[in-house]
Image (cartoon, rainbow, N blue to C red; front, top):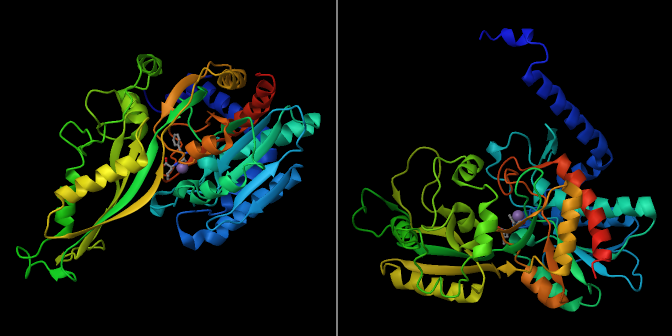
Length: 475
Ligand code: BES
Ligand code: MN
């Protein structure tokens, strides 16, 4: 068909869809506009917690949150820590009411590779109903939805159905070390009946989920050193050990040919995925094609014997997150580097304990490290895997809230990401955790062009409002 023909087909399907999309977009923008300035202000802080250079901006972001909480009528305070500040805000504590603690994080991941962003990461940009910025989904959009939900309920009714405490930290993306220490000293202040967190995912646009499990994590860095300094690879190639080559061999020993982790003892404590879980997950349609489309890769790869969704949610892994050493600049340089390093993380499932896995991995690496190089292992942060009962009274209340918000039964899922503090949070405060995430699979969390749909901000506000109602009468 000649391309001009489409102009002559009145009310063509495409044309109608265009108007319908624009209409939806406009209504989304119009109804969310009052919140947009809050969202954009929040996103403009480059609150990168892993890079110490950004500490002042991280602190400024905490200050912004404190003010926002105070503006909506909560009592709020920024608590300095040895690391980044923690913001605590609360509604008036009324007796004979349940107390809900809402946890979130205002820190974000680094932005590199910067050249792959279509718009600057800290200059939020609205395009086709999506807000693009680092932290838009993870976790600023999601925690802001809770704040705005509480604000809206307070405006509409002058009260809240439950007492609310907000706990928003600035180190989630770097292991939550300060919060771990903080919790111990603030049990009374943070005492609650239940914890709600929106820092997980949805199955798809319009398909909500209650996440009842997350993987744990263990991070470490391995460094191999050879000669005292870099060497000419022509003069000494064939004579000197090359740490980069030996590192590659070492890392290749992390997996076997079926892509199972080859660390002895790694699977000892692993709880197998239950039959009901396999069945529930299989119905979600997250098949090979879905994953391939989402990650835009020519193929999938992972442990043999499990579907992609089972591997991502219910099986442990070993990943190389970064690898370096030697010449990284433009062009070539004939050099034998004097050292090479790799940054590793292991994702853990119930009942793998980070400390036990760390010991097993260190033993394995020491056993296989070639004697011609010196190996240093720098332990990193760790977090236990998380699992809760998706059929408890409060989980059922949360599921009703999700159903009322989206008009769709929420899926029961586990996910592969980690929120390292969950275990400590539940243990210290003695309250169960509900994970009600608003992230979409293609939100590009931790990647260039991270984005959050305004629609999810709106839905998240609604979710918070109905969640408080449902939890108030769940017992
Ligand atoms: N929101 C994520 C965790 C998450 C991601 C849960 C996807 C469910 C699905 C969180 O902010 C995060 O990214 N955590 C880090 C923790 C790490 C840096 C210690 C993670 O999982 O890599
Ligand atoms: Mn994250």
